[in-house]
Image (cartoon, rainbow, N blue to C red; front, side, top):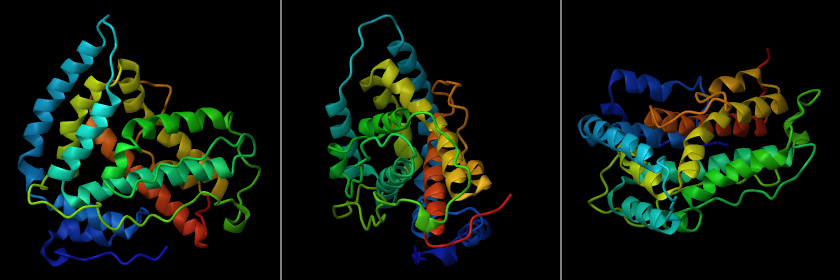
Length: 289
């Protein structure tokens, strides 16, 4: 897929950020990279985020402990989604919103690719492709997690193919182009929060308004990244694909410690693996061992 990234503000970037913007060694969509570069340039990220992350990390662990007490479990998915969408429309910067929307599409494409090329069961494909912030009211964060678990479960045991396939030999039936052009509404002057600061504010709300098992599963779902990367790598003959996964070993379950970084690296992973598949689909030869 040929994308020409915008270069707004590139000449004002530090030497390091200019190097990162020019480095295409690790696959990533130029559009996603430019959105992230803009997010990094948000001044609030560098002095508001550290303070909020510390405060809300403490609050998150207290909420986590509360939810694990032997008390009746409660959840409020509707309230959770309404609050998140209202917050995104009002306070989250447009580039951060677009990164969130891209994440839905990239992960749905990867899972649908695995589904389309699974030699056994063919579960129902994912349909989570919201194009605006308001679409996330019905195509929810909760559904995003649960659909991941459903797909991996229903695909059944994975049998590595005897040999890798050419792009034309693989099925791309449910693959969609990622073309998130905007956040779905005009920018408001209050939309100033970067991606990581926004996530720090979301964490406690998720923990409170999901059941303890739903939230525990959600923050451990990142560890399925490695399984997805191994499967994709075997299909396309690229043993380096597994290196794209930061979160690994799904059998090892963790709590909310270091959640912000793990969440962010999950987002990078889906962008990386999606870009690798896009390049393969376009005919680029996979790496060889």
